[in-house]
Amino acid sequence: KMAALGRVPPWRRGWQPVVQQLRWGSKAVTRHWKAMHFQRQKLMAVTEYIAPRPLVPPSCLPRKREPQEREDSGYIRLLQRQVEEIFRDNRMVAVCQNNWMPQEDVAMMRFYLRKHNIEVKFVLNEIVRPVLSQSKYKNLLPLFVARNILLVSPEIKAKEMLRVLRGVPQVNLLGACIDDTILSRRGVENFAKLPSLETTQSQTVGALALLPSQTSSLLQCSPAHLTALLDRHIQQLQDGETGTAAPAQSSGDQ
Amino acid sequence: PAGPSGVTVPRAGLKKLIHPPDYSGIVFPERPKLKIMERMPAVPKVQREPRRLRDIRGPSKTATDFIQGQYGILALGGGYLRWGHFEMIRLTIGRNMDPKEMFAIWRVPAPFKPVTRKSLGHRMGGGKGPIDHYVTPVKSGCLLVELGGRCEFEQVKPFLLQVARKLPFQAIPVSKDGLQRLREEEEEKKLNNQNPWTFERIATANMLGMRRYLSPYDLHYHGKYWGKFFLKHRV
Image (cartoon, rainbow over all chains, first blue to last red; front, top):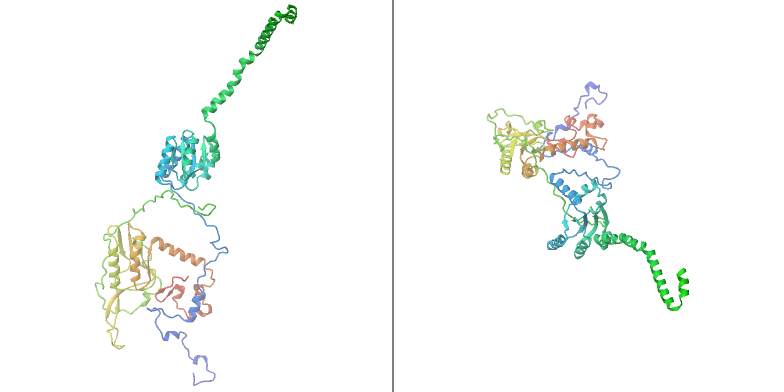
């Protein structure tokens, strides 16, 4: 080619192979990391993975709470049945907040409450909540949050219960359901101040019996009045006889 | 949940009783432990073979999925396994596994490829050296060992990791679910890549004459393989 510097026809120009870089260097597969050609490095840099970026970062969105799939084991069903039984069999159900108490104090409290036939039940919120939401006691749901215990009894002895609870500062009464009526803490206190059922019954009976007791006196009122007048009159006559006979006769005619 | 003041009082709920795992469909092979791999094949080769490093390059076509076991060691790079590696794997796994509850099987053949070595201290020339040892070529994506039985991945992972670190190429312990998740993640990455320029696109269309600097194998490998290495972060 150098010999003919002027115009050289193409079939005389010669042909150089394009693949010149394989003349030296290592093979394709090496034990070490083979240095990439710069163009290839640029290609690798350009074609890197770019992760998708949402407009709102996921940390700003509310966290999706996975729906808790709970297989209803027999144990859970048993506990739920027990809770239903509690609400069915007992007339008074009081919900109290239970803070930590030493075991001996717990035992003493239970003993004193047992004397008044009040039982202390420890229930788990995650069992009580579904049971209540499906029964008629839906309005008791807000009470079953955090630690609590149930004081249940077939009789209603609010005064004794409050007295025991006043002696235990760690247990605070939140609310009660007495005879299917929901009462707040103040309502329970007022309820306790009410006189007992027997006294109220006797009072109502007395109030009702008041009128009939008066009927006999009402009926006998006019003849009694007449007899009193006649008595007075007889007395006056007797007093008048000692005076003159004519004025007594005239008063007798009248 | 935190109340209005933001303070939570921790309390215990009902214990969630989980069912124990079901190992009913597991079939144990005759010998639970890994069999001894021989140093050289029964009939040693006479003809010396060319180096053929392409058996290291690229993705594996054999032993990519699980057959019998649930957990295994996945090779993330290419390389040669020698008899020493085999013994190390066999002894480590045999020492750490419980033959009554677990079993292990080889997914790679015994060394069959002859590798020649010239004697030390001699100049170049004089022909090809004699056969020194035999190796098994391994490509990336190949499962080396499979483990199965009445065991969990957490039990098996520590010693599989111990083995994987000692291998001449990158390797990780995987379970069946883990492998599937890896593949799914790869597919997802391919789909939600925001970069409009991909290696595959540029190589197949020979944009900017890139094929001058790429190998014809790069049309299949799409920039994920370079020599014997597997580039995990590439898409």
